[in-house]
Figure 1 (tube, one colour):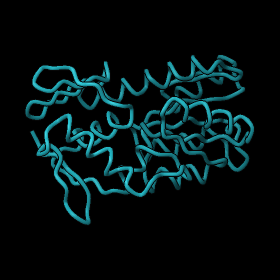
Figure 2 (cartoon, one colour):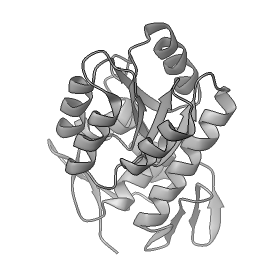
Figure 3 (cartoon, one colour):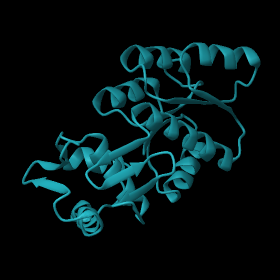
Figure 4 (cartoon, helix red, strand yellow):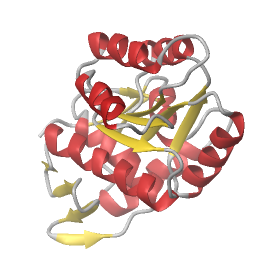
Length: 219
């Protein structure tokens, strides 16, 4: 799951990046509304954590522009504005959830998991292709009705491929879902994950289009 954090408080942003990356999440950070809209247009994340008090434009304006471009992108507002009126304004502008500062990290993680489940449910809670079934709600995978264990990144990679069955996913697009900007990634890291998936799913489940990327056959 890739997350874009839009927060101008550098200390808070650094703490959130460290904590969420420890949870195995791919999270990137920008400090302005204009930068956030540029990133979302270029390569949309799975979830946006949006601060309302940005230096270049009000967070609600960012949210309105974001919603005009992507109606279904989950947005969690993270802000010091904790009055009822502020919450209502944020939700009315299209936010999916609202978390007031200060907050506890376990609560933020729980809300992110809830948003992730909501997205998965909207797309299809259980995806079955051949003998492989992926349950996004429980984050589990079965092969021939047998539960198989995956690392977090293996699961995330398989989920992207199965959600886009029949469509080729480039190396860059897959890495953007697995790793944060600037994160040190071995040149063969993606190939290693694909190798491990093939050992667990069968060598023919994931196909390589040499020089292009990877895909799985549509169900």
